[in-house]
Length: 200
Image (cartoon, rainbow, N blue to C red; front, side):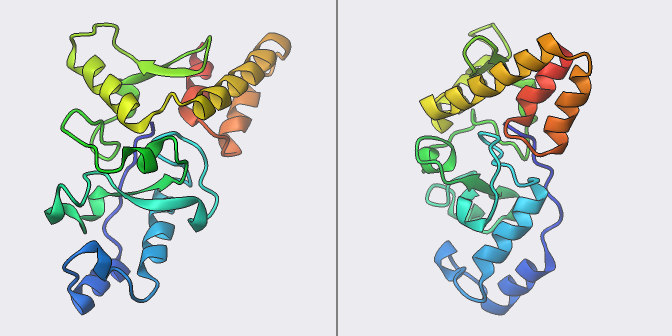
């Protein structure tokens, strides 16, 4: 998961609210507003899904995600800090999460996911950083992994494939750090996994 630093709510969105006074999310249906919101948020997220860390290359690859689901938290439906763009992968992330949410969920706008998650290099699983199963950090990390299905087969295999590539570079090239930096600069999937390798 990636930390997302939200910027100020964009003027076009403030103007839309002023003009149409939306009463629910279904009122966000004029002036191509949802695509504009997505484009703006994707820039904030550097084109990554904040949940699985895969790249979202264009508007059709992602959807607007209400971190706190609008059905459960109707007063948050247009709170800009409650909006992300999640990938459209059906087996994980926002599509899988649907309306599930409670206070144990690690909110990438409020919390720093790097404090909660690490990786099992042997199999590509994302795991709690804390080993204490009774700790708040372990409980929250486990809950979030489960609710987003971050260890679904597709994500685990994709992370494992990246790990295999990074291992080859680490074992065979003196310029290992430069290659890893290239992966980051090139916008490769799973940047927090690459950063973990930079510390190994």
